[in-house]
Length: 625
Image (cartoon, rainbow, N blue to C red; front, side, top):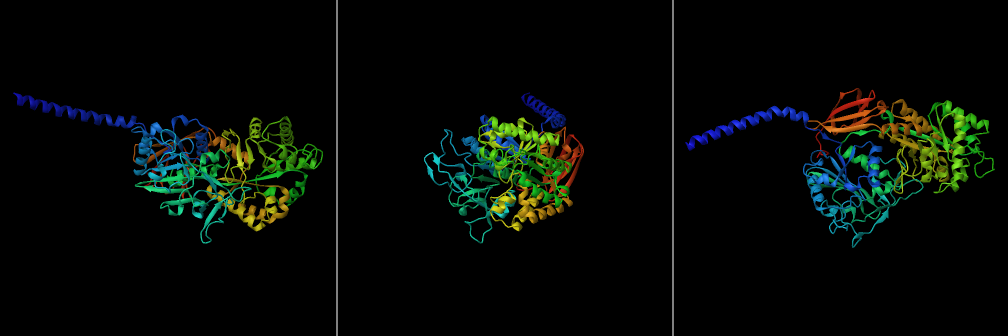
C-alpha cells in the first residue's frame, strides 16, 4: 500500500511538472512581448544621487549634448544594486571630478568587477579619491586597483597640485580632435620625438592643474597626455578583459572656467572611438565648415572693405557674419572716427550690400569701439546698456530685421552682457574663451550664462587669432594661410564648425593668404565637403537640434539595437553617425531616411519630421563589454 502511494505521488509530480512546463512554454511569447527592452545609451555618468542637479553634473550633460554623445546619469545606488541597469548594457562608465570623490567599498568592488568583465571605465581628476569619511584614501584606487603611476607630494589628507604645460603625440591630437593652431612643437621634448604642446589664444604656454605622479615613462599602459614635469596626465590601463582611462585633470572645473576643449574631446573620443557608439552630428546635413566673422570697428575699415569688394569676396563666397560698431566715434566720444551708420550714406550702403548678398549683419559691441572695450567691466551700468542699445537700434534700422549676432570689442565680454543679449533676442556671440572649440554654451564661475544663445570661440594660430595680430607678431603670410587651410580641412573632416575673425585693414597685409584660403574652401565645397555658415544660422540649428529626442534600445536579439528618434522641426537636417568598426547592418525600421557610407562611418539622415526608428547590429570587438 505504501509503495502504491509513492508511485501515485511520483506520477502526480511528473504530471504537475509537465503542466508547469507547458504553461511556461505557452506564456513565453507573452513574456517576450511584455519584457522591457534594455534602454541605452550605454554611456553612463556615475555620480552620487544628491549630485544629480548640481552645476558640476550639468557641465558634463551639456557637453554631451554639444558633442551628440548619448550620455545618461547613473547614481551610485542603482549601480551597486543587483541586476542594476549597468549589469547588462553599460559600454562605458565615466566617474567625474569634484562630485564623485567618495569611494565606498561596495562601489569600488562593483567597478572592479565591471572592468574585469570587459567594461570600460573613465576616472577623471580626483574621482574615487576619498574614503567614507571624506578623507583622502590611504590607498588610492587608481594606484591599487588600476595600476597607474603613484601620486607624489602627498601630505596627510591632501595631495599637492601642480600646474604644467602638457604634451601629446600627433596620433592623439588626431584622435582627440584637437584643432590646428591649438598646439605647437614641444620645447621640452627630445628633437627626435613628435610631441606637440597644447597652447591657447594669447598664451603660448598653457599650464594645466594636475596631481604630480611618478614618471609617466615608467607606465606600462597606453600614454595619451604627459606634463612637462614628467607626470602622467592621461593614460589607459588594462585589467583582465576591461580597460580604465584615467584623466589626471579637473575637466569639469576647467570647462566651468571657459576651457572646455579637453572635456569635450575626451567625451567624444571615449564614446565614438573607444566604445563605438552612435553620435548626433553638430552641423546641418553633416557638412562641416567655417564662419568668417568680420569686425568693422570704425571708418578705418572702409579702404579694406573696398579692396575686399574688388576681389569679389562678398559676392562669390560666404555668407559671412559681419559685425559693425555703428556710432560716429571710435576711440572716444567726439573724435568722429566711427563707422557712423545712422548718418553716413556710405556705411548704410555697405550694410544694404552685405544684406543683399546673403551675409548676416550683427553688432560689434556698443557704439564707441575703443571706449566700450576699454571701460566695460563686470558691473552692468546704464551707460553701457545705452551703448549696446544704440548699436542694436542703428543696425536694425538699416537691415529692417532683429540683430541676432554680437562680438565684443577687444574681446571684453563680461557675463552680464550675455544676459543682456539673450533678453534682446540675440542667439550667438563671438567669444575669446574656450579656445579651439566649436559652438558651445558657456559656464562662468559656476553659472551657466547661455540658455538659448551660443558662444562661438575664436580659432587661433598658437597665440594669435586675426590678420592684425599675426602682423603684429610677424607671422609670414604663407604660414598663416597654411594654418587657415588646415583649419578648414579639420572642420570638413571632423564635420564641425570653427570661427575665424579679422578686421578689414588686415586684408592689406594678408590678401594672398585670404584669397588662397577662399579658393581652398571653394574646392572643398565643390566636392560637397564644406560650407560657409553664419553664427546665427548655426545657433538656430543647434537650438533645433537640442529639441531632438533620441534613445538607444537593445532589442530581444543579441547585439541588435534600435535608435528611436523624434522631432517636430528640422529633423531633415540632422545626421547620425555610426562607426564602421563597431556597427553593421544599419537599416530604417520605420519612417523615412537616407542611409549612406561616408568615410569610416554609416550616416543616417531623416527625410521627414516626426518619428524614425533605426535598427543596427553591434559588431564583435574589444570595445564591447
